[in-house]
Amino acid sequence: MKIAIASDHAGFTYKEDLKKFLLTKGHSVVDFGTDSEESCNYPIFIRPAAEAVAAGECERGIVLGGSGNGEAMTANRVRGVRCALCWDTETAKLARKHNDANMISLGQRLVSLDTAKEIVSIWLTTEFEGGRHVRRIAQIDDLSAR
Image (cartoon, rainbow, N blue to C red; front, side):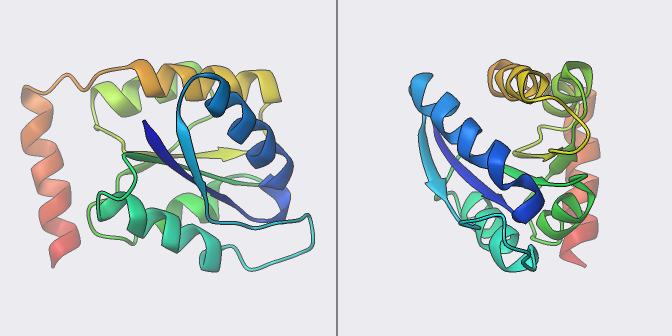
């Protein structure tokens, strides 16, 4: 799977670790930055990653920050993106099963690296349930089109 990844300075270390992790699992990774722990404005890195997912250039996307909140908010401004803030494997699983999340956001200051890897693994391998959730996703997409 081709995965977009981006972070701010507070998520940089995990971004670098998760890139290696994803490569060992056979995925390809497109890194949209940042390239250091130097303070930066995350929207300039997060938005292009989200746009790549929305355009189908990448199948999924992972964004990281200190808490992951601002990164999720930024990604969700892009039509066609459903970015879930995940803090454990259950939120990751439900984000896929019920919301067909094509992006996730993680907070480096809030979860361990091992937990982040578990979240990513669950999110990548969980299938969307479809069914009653399809109409709800259509409603979300309709709202973002307005």
